[in-house]
Amino acid sequence: ALCDLGWFEARGLFGQLAERGVLVRAGKAPAARAGWQRDALQLHDATADFVFESTAQAADNQARWVEAQRARERAGDDEPPPSLYAQPRGPRISCAEHADVLRRGGTADVPSRLRELAAAAFARQREVDFPPWGMHYLRTSPSLGMRHPVEGYFVLGDGDQPAGLYQVDVCEPSLVRVADGDRRGALHGACSFAGGADPAACYVVLTIDWQRVMWKYRHARYYAMALQDAGHLRATLLLCAALLGLAPRLADDMIDAEVEALLGRDALCEWPAAVVALYP
Image (tube, rainbow, N blue to C red; front, side, top):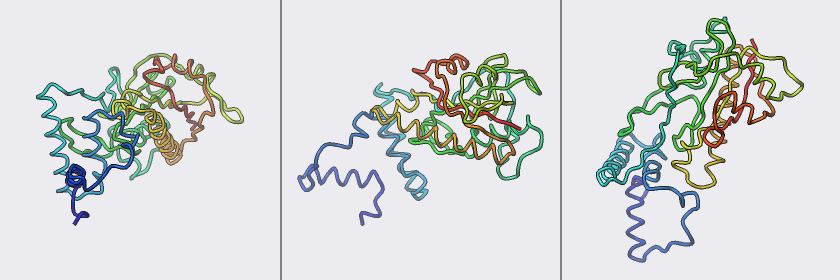
């Protein structure tokens, strides 16, 4: 009978048994949840097994979580999480037409392949309606706890587009120019590649937005979780680049302070986790 219970029902049952002395807690609560605030815990409960549950059970769990959220909002006890997706402002290069590139195959010219890479590695692939936060975008790479803390930046030279630093917009699949100027030479000089490497036509920098993951995981393990997300996305980026006919080279090391300055980011808030050089 226990196998037929949902997560909330099972937790309620064991809680009642504990109150009546039938069950006794052995030791302390797991350290992994010790620092979570209540809304983060509710989010985890509602989504931890989302893809493994039946549609009805998932909807029931989601409804319970939404009601709990609304109750806290009415009580003035709500701390909204940081946005899951950055929405940079500036001139943009649309990547929407390349969303299905992994299914239909890539094109020959390099500028199109870069847009295809942005769509394949970073952009949303499917959508799930998740009130009260609205639409949640499922991406090519997984993310622990649905926080998606990894951002992508393309460092481009002059070509079909002006040279500059372009940030990936996941919500409206596109590359948004957030800074002007060709920064490729300076970025290449701040990185080390095994066996040496010539300057590349394009670079992709992955960064970690610490606030997104720390909002939910308020303990030291958030660092490992964020690095695991960055590793997933880095592997996806390398695989997609190779699939699209590009030759990716992962930097073995970088001078963090110089890369941060080139991105215009403060490592206390957003830290560069990887640099990938792309060759035709």
